[in-house]
Image 1 (cartoon, one colour):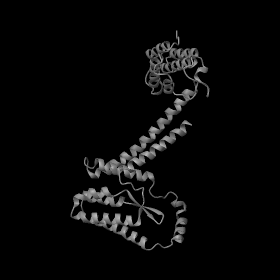
Image 2 (cartoon, helix red, strand yellow):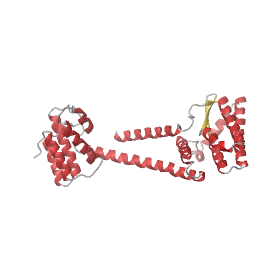
Image 3 (cartoon, helix red, strand yellow):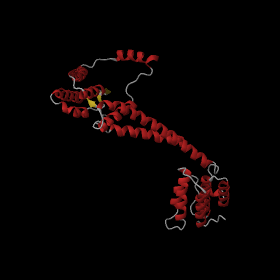
Image 4 (cartoon, one colour):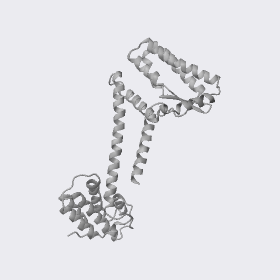
Length: 321
């Protein structure tokens, strides 16, 4: 069950990361009508045309462009990418050649023409779509697809880095740095997930070896816990000795009626069950913190650490000598 929980959290984190980067720019999730799309293209074309006289406004033009325009044409949703336009504008910013700007104007002009044709005439393409679907169903086209959410996320990260680093380094270096950062983040996320899964499985195995599933801690009497802790200490396994001594304290308090037995509690939940006014609260708090450091965070432990835990067991009223 813990593995499924890890994957569920990882999926949620991936979705939140995608949303966070998408919000860095204009939100394209709400589709534009054809009229709105044509107006957006017209405004962009007008702004690009003015760049010849106002080249310093190129950053503002790029900033107004979303990653893609999403258009609702009679219930059919289309995504029109602006990456080629933005790439050309970035290139023109670095080297303001007339041909580059003319190419942007041509691209926008084509978008205008296509939008006008779609709005004026909407023929039945059912036969063409059927033939196209048969072609795309062939083996050689099996892995062909449009932009995925990963592609869009990568583009958003790159654009965010361009805005962040644009004033610090040269424009030509940004694409290479962006690729390194994007793939570095992906590798880091995969490694973090793998480490999390390893730690989760390891902790689950550790807990399952203490008691049979569904058995409360107090089912094993506290003297037996203390005895096992001393055996681990004699073997030099100080982390396990501290771990077992902690559960001796929990078994002792549970046997005293400090709370009702429950097999699903965490150390922090046991601590919260004790009232703040309880005389056992300071000792159990210290034992819980030490357990978290030594057992879960895997910090080093030694004989002194174990003896401090035994002293706190004594303060709980649990004789250890």
